[in-house]
Length: 216
Image 1 (cartoon, rainbow, N blue to C red):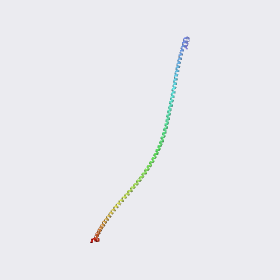
Image 2 (image 1 turned 60 degrees about the vertical axis):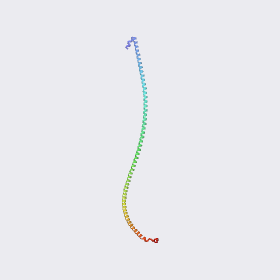
Image 3 (image 1 turned 90 degrees about the vertical axis):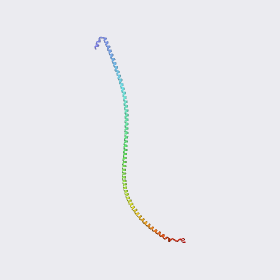
Image 4 (image 1 turned 30 degrees about the horizontal axis):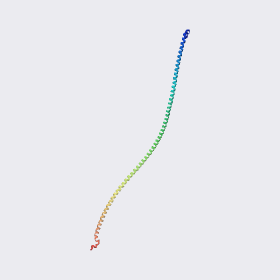
């Protein structure tokens, strides 16, 4: 206001002042335009950056979505495989359990069979042992009886041999007596024969006929 009062009485000064004011206004406008342009440029750059950020975010989100989908697919496949393996493992475990039960039942049956067989064999062995004992007892009794019979037979044989020896001695004595009697009888017979021969020789010349040829 003080400037306007000073320049009110001086047209040149007023013109210069107006001109300076206009220049300042122009400068301010240009400065404002430059600031606006700079702000617009920065806004456009920020928008571009924002757009690029949005696009990058969208790309990252798409990549993340793809990664998530792939991860989910892999996880689902792994889960499916794990479930399959689990089911297979359960089936194998169930089959193994059933097989183990069957094997155990078979082993128990086999063990029972072997036990029964062993019991039967043990009983049979016991019967055989009893039979062997009985046979041994009978054999012992038979051997004792045989020994007794053998002893009795030996005794009887000894007695028979003694009787035979005595009988042999008796027969020898009888034979000796018979031989003695035979010798005596033979001597008597020979003596009688000798006497008979002598008597016959003595009587033969008397009994022989005369040959007529001898008489001539």
